[in-house]
Length: 119
Image 1: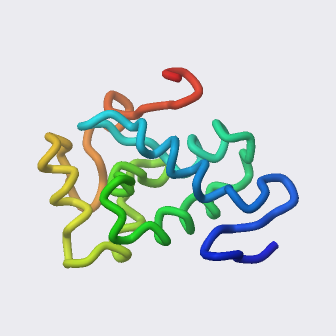
Image 2: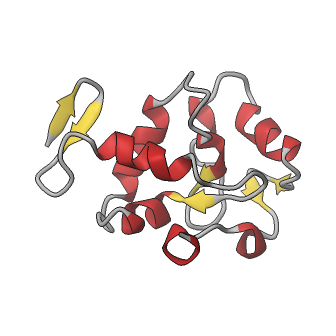
């Protein structure tokens, strides 16, 4: 495993892992959230939730990837420290109507978007 041009390279995923993650992230509907693990599972790398997190962290400044819509499996904003500004991730979600209390998505089950079921 290693990074090549900012993209994770692994035997099971190849050098385009990050781009595959971004393709799925772009499909998350406005006002919905998904998890790192749900994306990993959908792209056939079920044990690679952490790598999905690395991909989300690496897309800082890319307006075409809604990284703020990707949270941990419990709806916690674990990636928020990778966003500029103290509460930018939370603000972006709240702008979409997603309620956040103590860094956790409220009504997570209702707002959860599972690409395996919805694509």
